[in-house]
Length: 302
Length: 324
Image (cartoon, rainbow over all chains, first blue to last red; front, side, top):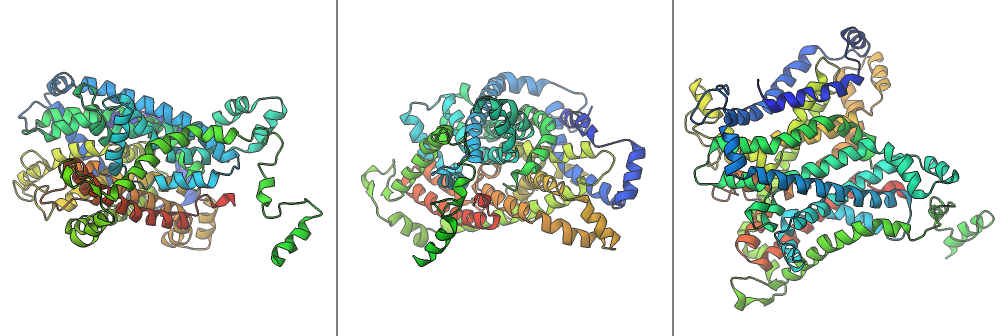
């Protein structure tokens, strides 16, 4: 009955956590072994932090679900009027499709390009390698917002202004460096001898990569891919600048329009927020476990 | 010359030539790998071309325009400017210093607080307790939330007539009608709190990942020796986390410096410009003010400041150093 999002966040990863033994008896034995801190030292700060995390989400759901003018702290009686309004009148249905398109296209492009480049960085020595690594790292320090005007001119020269491709390319380009660094770290962690064994058996380099390296990269790729999707789903400035017609806009721009309108319709704003949040929160709930293993697979250490 | 001759003599019997590049005979020298010398270039070509076209070229055009007067609304003044723009930035533009100072304050407050809470949170959810999986998923969830969505949510919370403060005032806590976002005294912390809400999970996730790679044996040995939990944290956990903390704080500092979404939508840089960061000032100058020459010079200055951070970042993290 409470937060639909919170429930989704809660239900999905629960089975994933099943690998660490949850039964109570086992737990009691473990506690004796590693002598953790007293339970209250975990639950009290955790509870306070949970309130800080969840009250804002709840507040948004409350406004999205209760009728306009209501001051109740419980979304009852529940209404779908704000969602209907935002989805149809405020074109969030269109925005949703656009954002999905941009997210998936830039995720696929980022992964393909970063896998190829990451493999080269992990497995070869070549003359431009260090220069290329340096360029990747330096690019992390370029303020994306400051590139808006020159990028705008570039896309105008390519006649891509007001085309989805401008946003897709821009998102891909700014996702690439970090994705490539992460992926090359993951590939380095796969022993090269495994690939060599496959070559000896007559596999081509590509086949050896597909059959042996790629499956082992799964947790890392899930993390990087979801990064790329969530990032471009969330990104605001490129779409704001490069897409001029309203029917091509993405969700963050739609939200910004709602925020900026003279008399803010809080119910519609909250419903728009829920529409923006649901996909990324669901994705997050699924990948949350891989995210942590993906990072501990050596990404942080390079 | 004499120095180089010595190792050469020693290297001669084993492998002749190229004494200076022992690494080359490593991966590159293996049979099967050298077969296609051009392959690595083919593989990085797509990434390289994309970055040349859409990062390097725009960046160069920024450099070019930073030396020009280029303002669409004042075409009669356009032309080569030399270092005029830079002189104006450093000596005649109080807004540059004001926004730079605010950026620094914003980055320090955000990164410091996010690290503090992220570390605490990671230590808590790294313990074994009932409901850990659910707790992790919930506390990490704001990670996936965008700047604009954060603004959406916190505008609802901060709204003076329907937000949280009104209900608190109903219960006798605080006053009615306080709008934290339009008061220059409270707007900074209001924005910091909103950004903190979605920023802490980033640190918590990275630190948790690193915490899991610490061997349990270390703690067992320490507790057998009678070390308190705090000393275990200080002497085992913290040194182990050092690299991850350096890396994530620097990445985050740059990210928080550059990030425009939240402040642009939440405060618009206001009230009275007190929450305008340097990138926000540049965006206003270049996009709304159409003074692209001056905005380019500001961009260049901002980039140099960040490059300084990037050198620090490379030094501290020794990133890529394992190749040598």
